[in-house]
Image 1 (cartoon, rainbow, N blue to C red):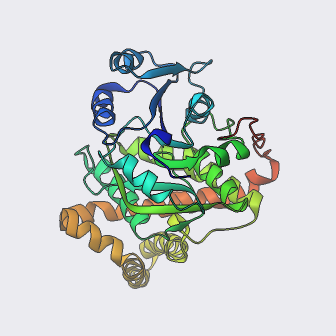
Image 2 (cartoon, rainbow, N blue to C red):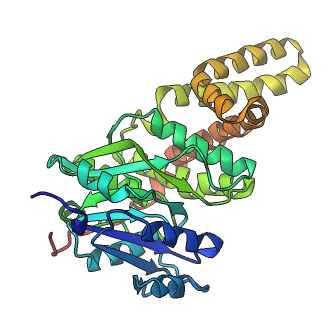
Length: 341
């Protein structure tokens, strides 16, 4: 069957869309061609998110519980969708006008089950941490394999039949977490093909702080992702888990040990210097990318954040493998929906 824009249902979960929500809705109105329908699922907002969407004539649904989480919100949107393709976006990204055309062109390949994009290299928020976080996300996706084993619901489309057969997103992820990664993992294991389309980009508007960055990375990313990997007994070698990233984590811990040892014996400072050179070598392409985009001062500030990321992410993974994974129960697998495209 030839896919057309009318076969695409665009689904946006929102909780207190805030100052950027109107811009997001304006970007949806500017889609050319437009999708067959746009569904907004309000997850218990206390602001005017629903009213703004309704004022634009959009179909607005609500979750039965206050803040059920984006997984539940997306599942509700999917259950009401009429299209053969479900296109999910986050409520803090700006899609480009040609987004629907890109999806229909890509999924004209009958063997492809899903496609997802990435953030662009011009983040909407000017704060340093926001720029760093989004540029890192952009770089990771641009240097990863197009033959993906994951999925990203910030800007991702999946065939409704495949989505229903998998039972949708795991509702146990009650916060914005790795519900999309977990769905993509199940899709890949079922034989589905997923493509990372590197030129399919959206602009991220979210403002990150150092605190929100670390809390999100540990609580909503590293912990559940490590538990997922521990249950599966398989460590993928793509995205943030490439061999170079694992080696970088080891070097960061050795660097930390060398710095403390240098207090006792200055000879360890030479070891620390060698480890710094090792980290530069392993991550040279990233640091060169950041330098080209934002200059030397930006890179100088990004280095401690990047190395700190390696420390707390690897520590979280080790904690899960050694302790938590032994006692935690895996999330219940979604049951297949009875509705098919």
